[in-house]
Image: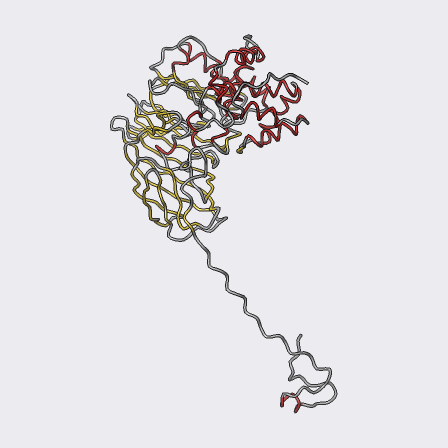
Amino acid sequence: MTLSRRTLCAGTGLLLAGALGLVGCGSAEEPAPAPTTAAPAAPRQFILGAAGAGDAYFPTYGNGGYDVSRYTVKVRYDPAKDRLTGTTTVQAAATTDLSAFNLDLAGLTVRSVSVDGAPAKHGRKGDELVVTPAAGLIAGNGFVAEISYEGEPEPLRNEALGVGGFLHTEDGAIALGQPESASTWFPVNDHPSDKATYDFEITVPNGLTAVSNGVPAGKSTAGGWTTWKWAERSPMASYLSTVVIGRFRITEGQHRGRPVFHAVSTGVPQGAADRSIAGTVEVADYLESVFGPYPFEAYGGVVVSDARISYALETQSRPVYAASFFKGGVNTGVVAHELAHQWFGNSVSLARWQDIWLNEGLATYAEWLWAEHDGGRTAQQAFDARYAGSSGQLWRTPPGEPGMANLFSESVYQRGGMTVHALRMTVGDKAFFEILRSWAAQKRDGNATTAEFVAHAERVSGRQLDDLFDAWLHGKERPARPGKR
């Protein structure tokens, strides 16, 4: 222990020295240091989370300051009234000290918001829902927000694809679109950089089917309504979520221990569409042999009949196809494209929209590989035809930086596919297919950029590839034809 100056000096008994405060006893200890008081901690500075995810092409998409891990979306939709009511639970963690945060929600009326069970203030700034919890949210801590809302959902007209989001149909609805759609039917951090898992409970009038993402989790009926449940347990970018409500021909089964669920609108003539999506598992098995294990827990496809939907979209685990793809007969090429996205675009997702070629170029190349496997022209022939016959506009639009207006241009798809084949011609088949398989494995359930893909291709191949990718992704004239070396 530490002795005080009042302690007896050894062998002297000189209490007087201690009593008078004299130093005395040369062996006396130094005085104990005065107790110190810790400086008060600086008060936390809580801030409003950013109203965008920082994407150069779509600055208002998504939000900052938190990371979502799970959404539970429970909605009831009455097609006769075009009326939706819902409650969405958002499980997230703050990434900075937050006084308030934003969620993307277009058009619908918010009735109540709570955060961690306590009522929270809320307001609107356009399509942004601003939530102010009763107490600040501390960085690193999890929180749960619950939002109740209702209204007549409306589609969005985005700058890249046109109309997307929640569309009222004759007997139901379709929620679909890229680069945005989710915010038209539930509050969400609507940018692919913030992936999460999802549970959906969709209640519709008896006789209608409500199809969504992931594994079918059962259904129940009460009071003239049926609730369809779906669970997507792999992280999913928000634009890949969907709900399609209507009357369908349903096909269910199992493949490799996973559920298969197909739905074809009864408004589509029976035949080519049904046979095309019935080929889903065969196409998936082939792509698995090229890209590695299929990344999700379910298979399926949905075919819709609506003049406003003229595209197919790789909605996770269960792509949605416009009926027009099958007017000419069986079309497994489009199935191959959308299934390839399950690896490239869905499992390995974009970190920013500028890098959309990573999705579309690899999916286009998968179409070429599938056609060759299925007895059609080879991937080399597909490349040669496009290299020789593509328009000048394709070469003037660099797929690696197409600009927001050209996000879904021919260059992104076709020149993107040619970029993939140019890589193959440069590094050889062994290195090329290892690049694709290891990329899908290492980036599974995550996000990626073009720079990361280039670096990965260089590591696997042992080649310097900057010149190749600069010419094919960023140049504004036709690159020199590559050759295997």
